[in-house]
Image (cartoon, rainbow, N blue to C red; front, side, top):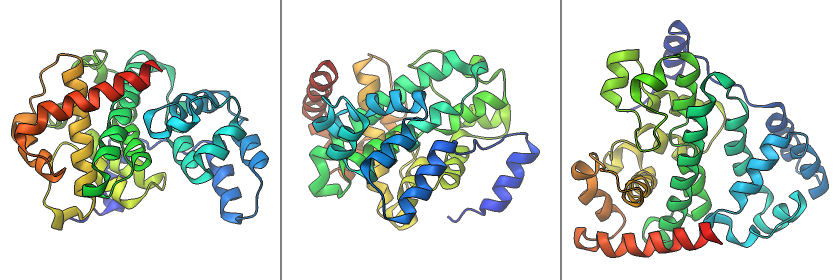
Length: 283
């Protein structure tokens, strides 16, 4: 199921959809890290140029995926505890917030909070099932933050997007068929192209593309486990907020199987994951 990226990008251009450019801070950071001869203070100095990204980086670093950094007071401390590579992943996620304009700010705030919570839950799920799935907490967190990154892009393109799909409610999120019918595009495809454009790992890009489905492993290889982690994290998010998850009845048993769990273990696993989530978010 290969994607002709050039054709897909040309189609988006014709529809007036623009992929967000990477912020200057992210580009400078990429350039520095490519040189492979840098000091922590240099990395911290570049990140510190953008107060918005810095604030979101501190918020993300205190997630369950990076629990050891929850007491960090400076960027250099985060870098020392989390590591430069994973801080770069977090900067990528935080950078997404910096390219959104104010036209969809309220809905985007809802989007960011929701994505952050699902990313936290995904990290917890990955942490528990790493021996089965071989997906690590920081990878799951990155995928969780970006899994619906096509949504804010479409918010900016279509003024009526949020209202039409009721996106200012954190428990409502795009239905793919509704998106296609109304806007002739869907956030999974757009999100995949954003992830590719920003240079996210291939298996994360694939997980973003298929996060509303669960293809066979032969289709996307190891990414299927990451898709399952995102799906169970999203399902548990719905559960925590006492909201129905219509997708789960279609894919739930396959998701649990991919995670090495039986359908009868869902309740116990939810109790375990939600307890860790609430404990870490309250810490």
